[in-house]
Length: 418
Image (cartoon, rainbow, N blue to C red; front, top):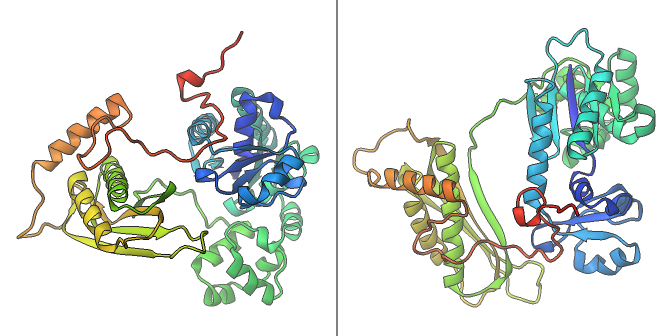
């Protein structure tokens, strides 16, 4: 059996844990640089605040409906998520963290357990230890556990936050209830094609023939169909090494001078290199991206990217940063006000196992230097050692004018009990 544990209105719930006055109040959480709404409490949804709403257009609406608006407090959300996931590991060793607020659990050898009661224990412990409310859906497959979780979330009074699909009758009833567009793994394009075939519910999807699904779509959709039928085909994901690593950011303000952009690109490239070393990978190429503010239609627009290949795989901040800066100089256009830049490292291979080149190789001094820098930065935090083309006084700062305190990750923001 599988369970999906989902934190209810996670970002809003994190804010409420440390500020109880926000309970039952409509809450909205904004994206990077306080751009648009990325999370809403049930109360905010009820008054009609849409997902993705640009806050500058909906400011008066939020004031009229007394919606409390917050900047994204990622240090707080990440720490609270980590606490929830550590609690889940106490109930089963088989846990797949699916997102910041969701995790799949697999129950092997739990045949004699009352899983509905066990799910209630999970909810109670998480709520007691962290203050975060959750819903638990239990079923024979991952896809069905998603469906069960939606039922638990939709009918909290009837289910008490836990719903178990344990029989064929309950499976069919659940699949007939859930709309095809709400099924996990079915995107907009796929739902249009399925609706054209007459599929309006998850149950309709399971009535299609296996051969037609495989021939029309792919093995992925066939596995989803079998999972919804109660035949487990989607297993827990094993931790894997990333195939590409990206660092992309929007500027707090637009920049048109190349020096500022070069410094940011160097910083982002260095960040990618540090992530490479952390997962013991090296890259064959980097992609550098640069774009203007697409929301300012009255200004000249420019969106461009370029690829740089290395003759040998590398994880050196020195090499990756130098090539990224050279790349951005080649695509920079004078007079454009740029809003977003990014660096992606790709073509990843294990650092200790790759094809050597007869004529080109990395400077052997780079490896011990990078290792020493990583050790010092981990020990003292805050990237104390930087490259010469980075601003030594500057750290990346988003516009966060509505930021709540970092209650659990900054000693200066910790709650004081009087």
